[in-house]
Amino acid sequence: VVSIERTDCAKRLIGVRDYNLHATLDSGQTFRWTRENDAWTGVIGRRWIHLQPLNTGILATTAGAPGDWKWLTTYLQTAVDLDRILTTLPVHPYLSDAVRAHRGLRLLRQEPWECLASFILSSNKQIRHIKTIVQRLCEVYGDPIVTPEGRPPAWAFPRAEQIARVGESDLRALGMGFRAPYLLQTAEKIANGECVLEELHDQSIAEARAALMTLPGVGRKIADCALLFGLGFDEAFPVDIWVMNVLQTHWFRGKKTSLRNLIRFAETSFGPYGGYAQQYLFHFARTRYTGSSKTIAT
DNA sequence: TTCCAGGCCATCT
DNA sequence: AGATGGCATGGA
Image 1: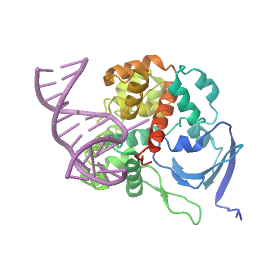
Image 2 (image 1 turned 90 degrees about the vertical axis):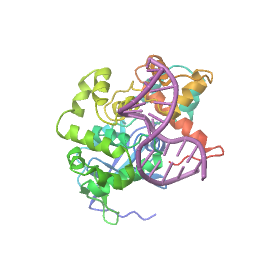
Image 3 (image 1 turned 120 degrees about the horizontal axis):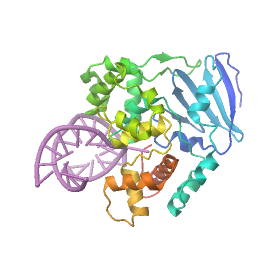
Image 4 (image 1 turned 135 degrees about the horizontal axis):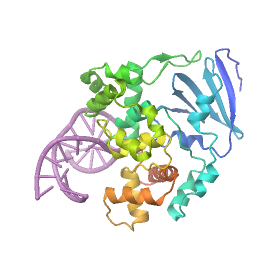
């Protein structure tokens, strides 16, 4: 293999062990990554980035000046002690199967607005299609960013102010359907400062969730996704259709249980890092299903 | 063709 | 509170 040193790229080995990059980037917590054989390319903030998992860590290649790489290690959460987190989870056979199957799966710390906006687009949609719509949204309304020579162009996720300027019909033209007015109205509220996502860190999870749920198109589930994947509330436990089925089947003996009761159960049963349990369960359920007669589009 | 997708919301009892 | 239907679009 011939490796050409490029002057327009910067490389860095992020030392980390027990990091399952594939599970992390392909478990439905983010929608902007593309797999290239064993590696991934994506966009974090305004930077193009290529990630290659190695035995000793993750080899990162980015375009332009990388600074201190803190933006990357924060996003990837490489400094968290996964062992310690996993020991806080309740002992349960299905959960331990899930952790064993995808050992090293991490929660990312994403930019709050991109995370919230993406999940507004996620309701009642397959992950495959969410990715398509997010990509179109970036291409049409996001700022172009620097990519290495020979790489296709890339775009930043559009800021709330950029989306707030777009007409609803233009958003619908991207294929987002009834979610268009939700995204537009929420973008307007973020742009004019009615809700400041970055300030939600400092509040209790209940207060932060209530603030998010005042936004159009943001109910309990999408609020919990934003809390967990974008705002660092590790106890948030989003209950979607997959997790609902998992909880009913493996925690409630297959008995029909209302969503409200499942949410209450999850809140009181999985501890301060329940969000990790949720993500392992979600990814395990989806990837297992792939092995049977039907297939899951990722 | 029919069903379903990382739901939310308005509108009923 | 709890249940029901509508909502756009596309993949299986």
